[in-house]
Image 1 (cartoon, rainbow, N blue to C red):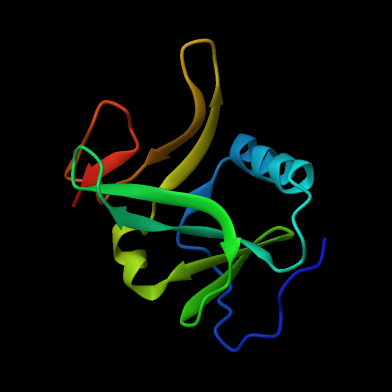
Image 2 (cartoon, one colour):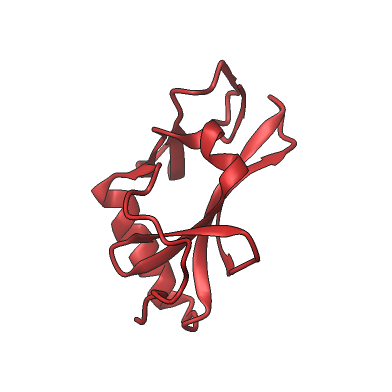
Length: 121
């Protein structure tokens, strides 16, 4: 898997923390989806959801103005404006019987919904 190193906006420290289980699941998804070298992991927020904003965690293409990071071998991008909403957040992968998927523990959220995918700040 190639990494993106040719951008002047690359930062060293990702403002979001990932647990080992989340990293392993992302690596598995990256390989299973057979993504090409232009694919990056996008982290951020978007308007909507039952609490006002929802998390964005998806493989995508780079866009102008993205800030670049690396999560091991996985290239990661984020819009600068989204950092304030996710700074210090921890992303986990849960694989229990009652809950399966990525979960977000965000210290910046003043209110969250029952699904854990939506928040207000």
